Length: 435
Ligand SMILES: *Cc1c(COP(=O)(O)O)cnc(C)c1O
Image (cartoon, rainbow, N blue to C red; front, side, top):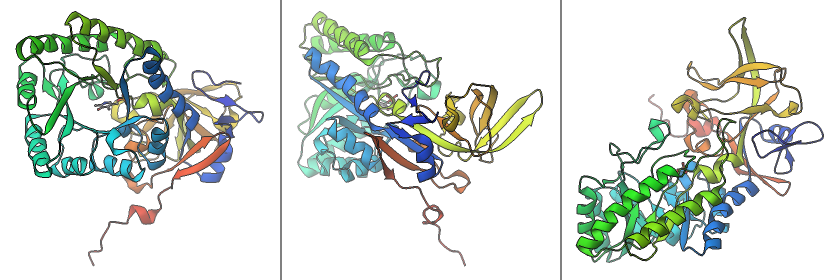
């Protein structure tokens, strides 16, 4: 039996299965809350992007935006899949180094890169820095000069496109903290600062218009805006980009309201658009870079919880509480993100009524799912929430001094612990006595 809307099945015992393993067994073995990833799905997601470029013979780099889920094991899988990697902090870069990720395939992002971050990037000879503002151009220039090194640099621009998504995950509009503005001349000034720099090897433009995007139209609009500037820059400065980085943001299916998208035709359409635009201003086809995060990790991960207390308010609502919440999945309380879930131990039972899934933090906003149709629920049932693979563990926090859950990878019918569950000793590790 197949689970509606999600890439998982139900086994003979009527339990939710992931990567050939009974999820209820995993919950018993490792405890809950527990993040579980089907590694084959992660690999398939990578290949959907990489193979589309390969098939079309288009030089490209597919970089996993590691903020979606960064851990040593995850980055090792990215290395095996020949992905490139985006990092946005020293911590993410450090994790990549610990994973043995090839440094020349790492790209550094961020709207406020510290000197230490830029130094770390230069010392480790990473592949590219995506520059975000004027101060940073200066810092990168002088640090590269100190080290007597050259480095590839892209310029992040805001094309003035609004993606149809939540405001917090919308980044390509003019009034954004990210990047150089294309319309008001800032991007052009930045270009002039970098174009002849002996240390900065200026490679081209980057834009990332937002997240959880389902239609190509916004990407195409953004591409049009980039090419409008490129056309002028070619005429005025004879400037021709080597690289066009179109960012990430490819939508995934959280609930049945999200139409599933097939990445191959999506990418093909973008490629055709760039080809068309490049032809129209008579420049060679630039190398295309993209940066999917959510689309790589999101649907491959689920979170398992144990059902605890239940509260029925007659005629109003049934609250069902689980042993996690906004500490392991911040997205519902941060931006009203929606999820679907099943009872992993009753995955073949008929749905009976709608219940609302509450976390256990001392916040009324700590609700994971409102009005979820479930079979009859009992204490100690295992709830499996789908599509928690991106921005779940990576946004986990210690509110109420919860320990962060463990992460398990499953592949070919084998399970492996890849992030240990925190202990309370870990939680208090940095506390110092005042007595
Ligand atoms: C967050 C981010 C991504 C990834 O976004 P997803 O929605 O996870 O695909 C890619 N590029 C940049 C610059 C980002 O900030």
